Length: 323
Length: 172
Image (cartoon, rainbow over all chains, first blue to last red; front, top):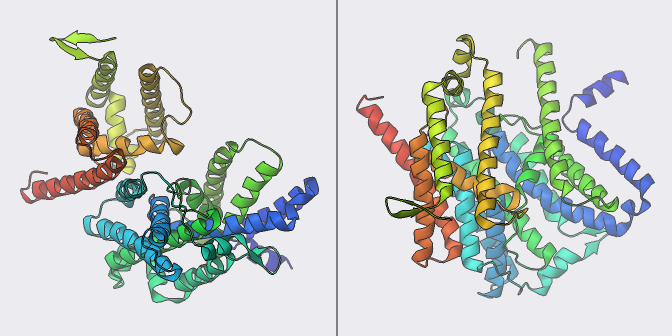
């Protein structure tokens, strides 16, 4: 029993899982409406979108970089998706492909610039954050697209099997695909290798440039899908989609045990990290605490998680004899 | 209120930033603490071995950074005559890009260890003039942000080209 427990405790997802369970029990005792079907539906909708946002950042954390433009790419893809359906009157399926393509190309541009110039990803994505957000505002002139087809609205508003919202399905499929990529495909292993030690990766015959570009393209695609799902959920193509993704996109992977220096991420941990953030955000609302405190709580949560990760690293380092 | 310098109208706020810039230039050029900051940025391990208390220097750097941001905030309040909670945009994002544009255009190394106060001052002036000029050219206020982002990309690219040119000529 003790061996099982300690082997669980060593995994990345154990900490956030315990936090999720304890928080659920406490909040349900204090306010039974927390587990009402409607609240579960709202919670899962938020989790479905935020999981994709968090995975988009997680892929970049895996290669040891940062992507500040996750929200800008998501917003640009979202308004492209809504705009294609309203202005060009394209069918939904083509608009989805178009929105995803916008996101993948945007991520590709990020990756190409970073790999080609060798400048830190922080600065390149800061610049592209501004460019993508500027294009977004230039196209929309800060006005939302209201002409979202009924099928898309229904997808974001209806549920199946009781309280499960439909956007959970693409989110779950993509989450599994990202896990498969990082754990079972050569490309995913290359990404982790580049993040762990770029020099060693080059010496092992991995093309760092190509891996970085691929990681940014995947990240752009995930951000775009999150933006498209958010259009379905909000029922309109808001230009402000993505403005508040940045903190969350770092909080969830870090809570899930990702090492910001790169080379170590956990898909299950990240998903549970999204749950932690969503439950805490909801709890603040249920207990009628000022919603502006959500930002403060998220910031403190990131600092705490980074501290815990550092402590675990040091302990593992001591046990295996290297720092 | 307007001051006149050589017949040109000058905002007193500009005097504040000039004085602060001069103080910073003095700090980085002539004081032990300023040199320690640069040394800690260039190579923390070497700085530590040379007797610089790197941890303490980092804390002082962040305190200085916070103070400068506070001075900028006070100047904005003085200029607009009002205090708005979202003054610097969502999570201060409106200040993030100019904050990087100025130093990078001015030749500050992103890797740390080298700063140029005069360059940063001129970089910030260039950003302000470009924003103003783009608005006068009627580019449309919504495209200004995209142009500033492209400018930052261009600036880092020029900086990269400049350094590889200097390296080829064997100057650095």
